[in-house]
Length: 350
Image (cartoon, rainbow, N blue to C red; front, side, top):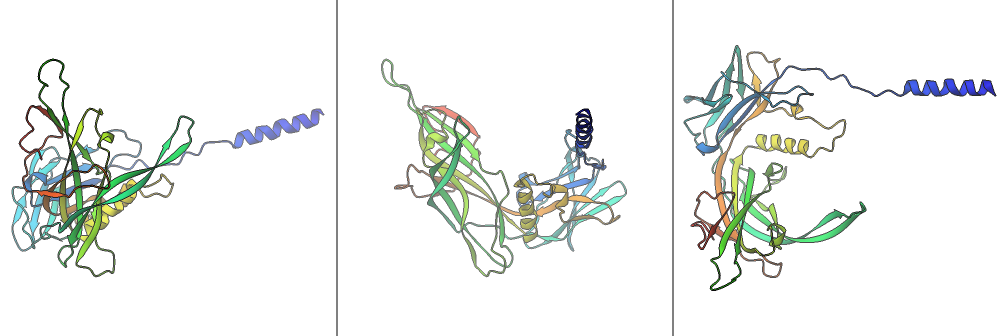
């Protein structure tokens, strides 16, 4: 019996000695240069930002790279020097011309970094704006941890955009502004003046990209789903005493290249990764910039040359039976994200 117990003890000791946590050896790689360059025909949106990649274990913000020389080079044309408006952040006092070709050059210490040559595309346009009824299945977990499915009716907003040899790919960012009205109850005497308020919502968790299907021949992108809105405005409003006055929909549309479309599509795949051991990391997604003075050096980032236009629409929806007809807005005042006025709505109110 003692012999069996001794044998069992050594067997358990052997199993315990095999239980070790695996700690992968991850190299502490020195920060690599990251060049983010976004240039449009809108001066307020243009920037070039220089940073360095962080160590895998680092929780510190990316290191800013200052003191570089940045140039926007028009092929067979002039060279525009970048202005460093803050540490590592540059802009240009000129705008690219539609149809001309450009590249970006960054001179840092003894190294020269250059992008591919990119053509400035024509101004983008929306040739169709309309809505459709959809029902989305949403799962909600109860207090016992059990998921329950609910069908949520929504209004989906679609756009059509033209496709040509010079412009066939687009990127969008959207902002929806819900207008609301509150009528305070009368306690004594005439009722107090109404309160007009608004609240902004953004649906830009990923890059919103549109392009024709590969190997297809078409003259436009049709019924591209841009965003969704609930019929029931109480899902957005803070209290049931507020009444919806409709939506202002602001669409920033960028005409871009196929290369930029594929680059940001790959970034979207990274954002949606499930955490598998073999998921790509962002530093495996290479852009269109290289180090010409030393090709062995790795540089990340993208020289993005985009044409830009903004569209605005007004839409009132309450149910699928009478969803309302979208109306284009041709005024472009600055609208704060949130706010309210008493007695009179703001000038931009729809």
